[in-house]
Length: 164
Ligand code: ADP
Ligand code: MG
Image 1 (cartoon, rainbow, N blue to C red):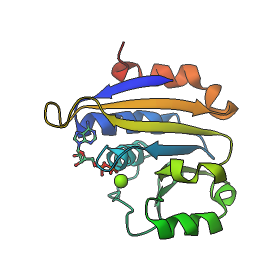
Image 2 (image 1 turned 90 degrees about the vertical axis):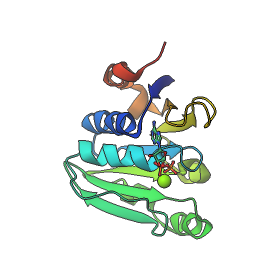
Image 3 (image 1 turned 120 degrees about the vertical axis):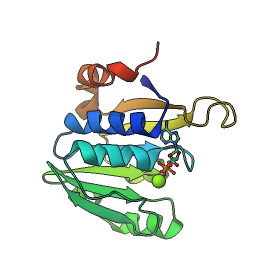
Image 4 (image 1 turned 60 degrees about the horizontal axis):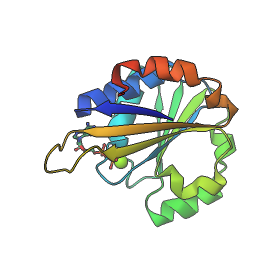
């Protein structure tokens, strides 16, 4: 488990961009955390790190958006119940097949349908919103061999933001 710390939306985007640099075809990242915790902000940085210039928006009203960069990015948000049922109809394994990488906001809600390998990224408010509204702690948990084998690369990549 890796704990990273960010003090601004820009830093959260930098973390996303840094992770995008080590992303491989078929990777799945699930983004967890309350509304406003920073999942979409992270996704925007991740997209930028893949060389995507198009603005990545919150996929609240659409289940999934696609953006072409170094890899094809699938950005999903399963928060809405209708999305949840749509995603159960959707073949996630097919989505993950090929030269693409998938980010799923609220992916914990569909954990039982996920493949065994993914990187879980949890966004939490470091302190109370009143005292430090722009601080977030990001907890990364590699699940399955695909990410556990990259644990060293992961911690090297995140070194600038790792708190001790
Ligand atoms: P989510 O997708 O988790 O609901 P968003 O990324 O859409 O969250 O929203 C996060 C909000 O919090 C944005 O308004 C962003 O500007 C603000 N914010 C403040 N500090 C941070 C930070 N360190 N990281 C990410 N977002 C932050
Ligand atoms: Mg969001």
